[in-house]
Length: 179
Image 1: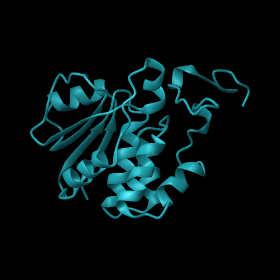
Image 2: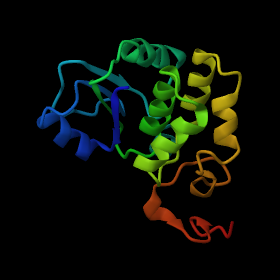
Image 3: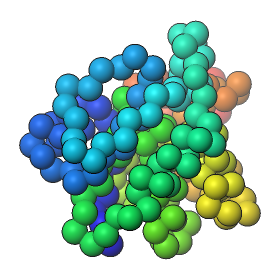
Image 4: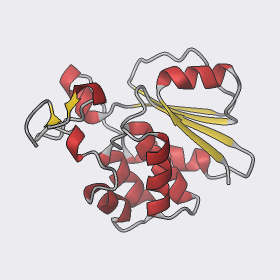
């Protein structure tokens, strides 16, 4: 199986500059510039909906974005090194990584465990998870795992569903809301 790395933008720039990935999927806010690009590089521009809605720049991911990822990664082979990154490495890239791993035959539980191992504080974007679920034909298995706590992000969202970065999460729940 190929090697997968899930990372935030700063780490991704270093890996790209060093030539580590053979393939890269960049998931960026519209207008974000990359310091480095790889040879086999897919760049998609959409937001992590909850975070960007606060800034008024929300562009949600769409089925076409998921289809592009699945097409781009379909031919990955042993020895390939795939870098999947977004800005913070919390929402978009973990969701996409789970979808890619399942596409390549990993079980839902194994895919979640691998992403959680690399990004323990992640909160995979639920819209992306649902889009991958539909595209891969998982019948709700990916979305169900996210809803059942497989993504373990329930403590990182406000009651309205806004995803909070780890720095804003207190031990009593998001933004100190006592949950």
